Image 1: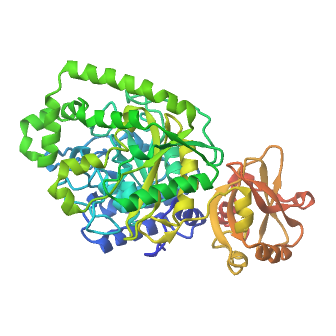
Image 2: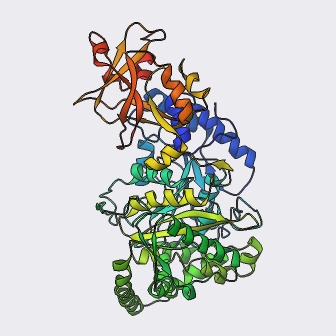
Image 3: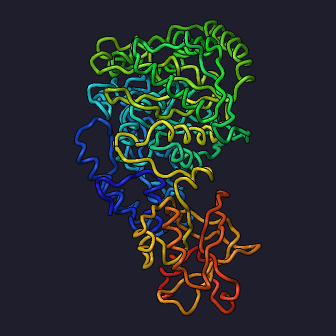
Length: 602
């Protein structure tokens, strides 16, 4: 069962789904209860019918979690992204259409076992960073309803921050996947342009658009990226991922910090102090913070909206806006209509200026590994944005508008709270294809700066931490048999205060045997040169609790070192080789739970 206060982060929920403690059908019921409990929060434009959600859950339960990395995980998509058979509105009812095909990136997530719950609100035609330009209503901040949620991916951020779904997709052309993350204590991953397919996405600026990911943790964002990053040859803007060697940890990183005189917080001293605190934390974590000239980046940010790229927004919906201009939100219409004015000469002149700015920024990247900046310099109330919609929106983009023009990868991470309890965020930026490195560094920084996820008040799950951190927190042990969640000996862990870290598999170097002579029946896992990946759960205990736990392990079982699928090494159950002679080899089943589900071992 999924209870109201249960966490939906991928690590926690994924472990429960794979253990069988929670079923996809329970997730559907729990998510719909949470939507109902929040009432009309303006976050959703379309929730899928219950019959369709139940059918999807039943389908997943028939298939089981094997080979489905996002098995049973609920997510949402911004309503400028297509789902076959359901309307795409781009927050403009008169524009709505029903696509025949699902967007490529959504299909990749469905193929990975995720469950799509519905489509979320946005600044109309993804034009804005505020979350207020929608006929479906303005999304409020999840921490204080007087403040904006950020946009344009407003609903996508709100439903994750509120703990309604595990992750969501937004789009990000000028910051729409990062500003709402900062305002709602979330991670916002803006991947390298083209890494996630935009086929089936209503264009804003097609040459700059990318699909973004909102998640409770940077580790979750990385897991979603792994499932979603499938090269799409049918998307002319898709790019094949290029392997790059990015930093693995903050310690030793050369991190560029804009000169103080080039930073703008629009009078928000609390935000300024939080940014200084984030930079200090990076230094404390071992980074070499290097002051850099931020002028080329700021100039590129201004170029996006002061230059001719708004013409791309006009081209994307030219036929519709010319035929039905009154259908648009007044501010949206004012901005997009301006895209009819630039000439071809203006476009070429802007391209030349952009190339000059890129060349000007090159020395910066030679001196640093990545750049840190505020995600936004301040936050505004709904009333303030209503009174001055264009200028204040522009203020929110000075640290985001340049990123896609300069072909950078970026991850926005939470960076603390103001005394009034409003979230603040910073963004780590790097050249294209450093996405996975940014996720690792973002995870480290998020954990150093905050300890809760979104607006849920739930603690961050334990990280797959460095050995020194693991030793400080406790001992991790991989279990593969009756100690798994829901099985007869699991109480030996829980009664010692053990905490489930994650459900995963071993490296493909093990054999699993059904040993005779135990009640309840037990498996024996043996490392061999060639083997299988075996399902395990990793639990963490205090050093004292681990000692008492090990004391109760009967021969021929023992504790050794187990290598996990991602290369991490933890303590774990292994078997003495003599005991496997004549025992049944059940390695092909992939785990002890699968063996028991066949009615064997009883």
